[in-house]
Image (cartoon, rainbow, N blue to C red; front, side, top):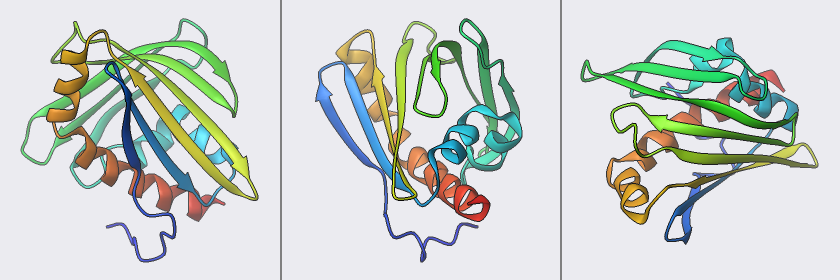
Length: 164
């Protein structure tokens, strides 16, 4: 279970900068290299991505331009949740651009741009997800993604703080 008492940065902030986009911003008490590694090393993804909503059963990462990634979890309700995509840009530890598909809705491929900005040992992670339509963006919001995201990022906070 995550100890959020020591989390001085609070929850991620979710905003809608355009009809096609969701922007998630969260600060972490850790260097950018550690936060970047947590997104790109399967053994670390397995430790935070499911949050308290299930168990990660697969974390594949082929970290190269054109390489594929796939993360799968079995949710607490017994159903499988799978996301996958392809890496388009890699600038370690500053920027990662990848496609992202929630496999239940393969036509709603989003482009995710993750930036890792470090200042004074604190890394600000920004995730900008751009969807093919407002309908797809709104469906992502309606799916409850923010609740899952918050618990996942809380686990990520614990992981990187312990490693820092």
